[in-house]
Amino acid sequence: MRLALFQPDIPQNLGASLRLGACLGVPVDVIEPCGFPLSDRAVKRAAMDYAERAEVIRYPGWGDFLARRAPGRLVLFTTRAEAAFHQFEYLPCDTLLFGRESAGVPDEVHAAADARVTIPLVAGARSLNVVTAAAMALAEALRQTDGFPSAVQTG
Image 1 (tube, helix red, strand yellow):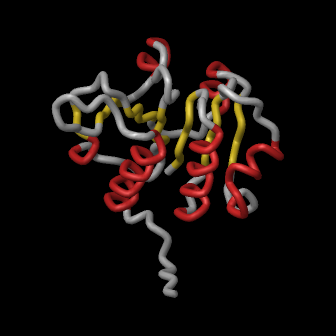
Image 2 (cartoon, helix red, strand yellow):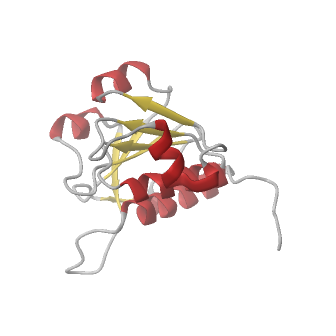
Image 3 (cartoon, rainbow, N blue to C red):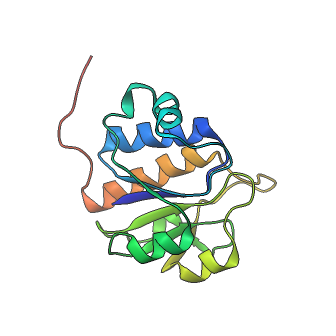
């Protein structure tokens, strides 16, 4: 299982996504360009002390991601889908892709996805925060594939 972020706009969301990936043992793919200056230092600052634990691969652009990405299905989370994320059948090799906070993803990204799913919302709600959506998606995908870390920490 992988988490991929398409051209993230908000550094704090990238940091929270890296923390999410680090805590769940899920690698994070960052597809640039980002909406903020992205340096290794900025990533570490946004991810706090979890940056050292996060497995991150940066791609200079969409074409590079497509050429070098991990094998498996590309599952796009979008408001332009009819299938609900919790009814979709995930596989351990899936990459869960989330778009820009400000604009989602362009049509070429939609076309490249193997599957498109959505998180159902109440009428009138536009979208969730990207990290909230990613956490919900990873939780369901890891639950279905028995992919949660086995060590349970207390305290």
